[in-house]
Length: 84
Image (cartoon, helix red, strand yellow):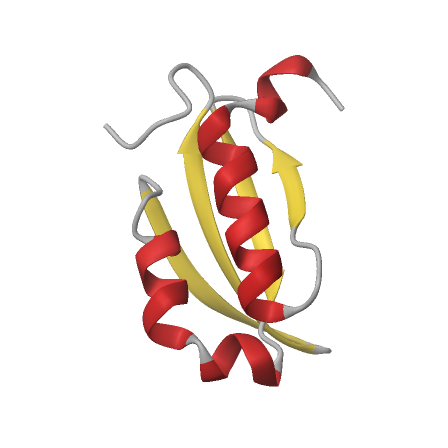
């Protein structure tokens, strides 16, 4: 994993989403940001108010429907690793 993927903001969001959902989120590097994707498990859905607090730390976030279920995601800028 590249050095900038290890920013405190990314590590913190991944750790919190893992605790809230019971599965490890994926880290997807982009050209200017890092996207964190978490499968929406029943546990994650049960903790939705706390999940929204984590997602809101990104520059943007959303919920995507895939063939295998829903994915909650957020983007954190690569330059700063924090919300602008």
